[in-house]
Image (cartoon, one colour):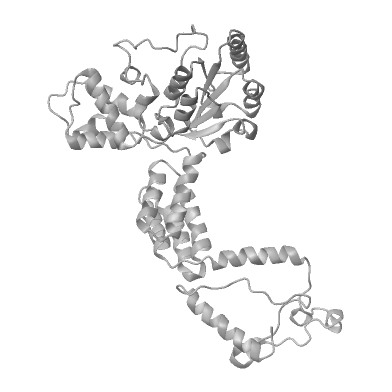
Length: 439
């Protein structure tokens, strides 16, 4: 991050020294050199259109680490001829913001516009975010915020309404290969890797261009007599830890992907997303809780064993611990993914709860009420109750609904799995009830 109060040309075009880190030496000098974000920087992209028009609106750059958010902001200022100022929400407070806005006002008095880049903008609290509003509205600054977190969760509505959210994509293999090509051209040296190891290096970056270039620089700093194969590369370099904050969007994205893969009966995808969570450090009991919920919500009585399997997996994990207990979680995941699906019980819960709220405190019919006192018996409690075990087929066909309410249908079993047998029973009972004068 550049010094906030550096001279006006400090953000400009001086090339980094040869001793600068490789990532700095390869930093793009124009928007056209930014890799992997052509959907934004190209002629039809939002940024490309702004630059062509020579007018920049306030924007929030949302994307994973190492995708070029800071670089894009710098180049935007250059492209539209604006003063560039940068602060980091990690290190800045109210006093720093006041200095920023005062400097921007000085720029405005001299006829210059200011692009204010705020890194990690989501780390500012709500009051600090509100402090930007008047200066954005009156044009003192054009705000470019950068965040790795979902702006919907981390930025207040007033700020979001004044800025356009642009999503930077995780760098794909082709973009990362471009960075390696540039590194080789800059250094005049080929990477000492076999083709397979080169692919492994790209995969290990997990879409982070900065991480990739740091790994490349490490390889260049070591005397390597013969090209490394994937195994030798893995032994030399540590693989990047997966990006996963257990209270942030990555957490919710993966659990959503797991749940929907299970619902879609794709055991391979479900295992993948479950493994992603566990490898990244998610608590196994959290995954188990979600599997239990899934068994009740999306399988239900289509396979009543699903809930039992998930609870058994929880007990097995409690008993075995890690890593042995993970195989029980895998078994529960596979059982849920391959079981017949039904949300009929879940939908029945929602419908019955709504009906209960809507109908208030209607009394059940007196014939199905117990009469433990003489008074209750005298007023009719229990009168006319038909004991089902004494009836033909063990079924009386009585009406159990309040007199002021017509019979409802909350639970509609599917024709899948065990629920198909339940549907046959309910149809049988409904037929008998109609014949015997019940509901």
